[in-house]
Length: 321
Ligand code: NAD
Image (tube, rainbow, N blue to C red; front, side):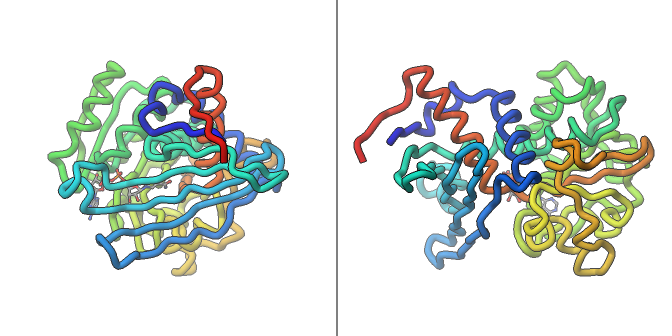
């Protein structure tokens, strides 16, 4: 069994490797070669922690495993550790024996950023030039960096519930040599692509804040009850997702479906667009919306990529198990 510790991940994986792994596994999910297991998420009643498992099996890529982890809100203050903690375990699908244990913290950030970047590649208008960010926390910086590689954006605009956090994303724009402007929510009408990545339980972005032809990646809603955008916006858009089951239960689409504004059958898997079995955006004026809920197979795909890189670079620790 191979171990790749968290400390080595940053030196091994690249945004491109994460993007390629996620794009490939989304396609495998849509073709039926790969599927995700039902998500387990438990409130432990200890340290206010949320803990759970996301797993899956990719028959084509021969990847089997799970990510175990969650959120420990007291970690930083009490122990100087980051609050999100996760580890990926890979197994040999022929024997069930464990093959790898991989640090999952940075990988989670990179695979989530890769998902919205893959949606932009396949769904945003080719001439998209302004990108809007809703959210300016830890994950927002990863999302923006990966998104900027998908189109020759000329400007970044941003809104955040806590405006004092906006410099986090302004810094990423500056690193890419782009102008940044803080806007109010109606100002998002200037954006050709919008990424929302917040922990909100009530919508910020309303249907009339968005212009025709925009692509929106809703990335923050990954739990029942969370919501970032008005349900009516999903009714105005062609809606895509990583995994339909998750989209309608824990994703952004849960609200539009519950309100009868969107049918489960209206939601298209992004992998179908990647595979070429769905045309994706059908006009320059259509609004496309990607509901990125985060699936176990994304974690397995980036973890498997990092194990290969660790072996190539002599950094994988081998243990008898
Ligand atoms: P963070 O705590 O660093 O940032 C939280 C963000 O939400 C900040 O921008 C904050 O200002 C904003 N926010 C807080 N309360 C708000 C409110 N009431 N209304 C609007 N905005 C509000 O967290 P993060 O690590 O950046 O993660 C953001 C979200 O993304 C979380 O909800 C997390 O669960 C989710 N997430 C999703 C995936 C996925 O695969 N879809 C993966 C990782 C994280």
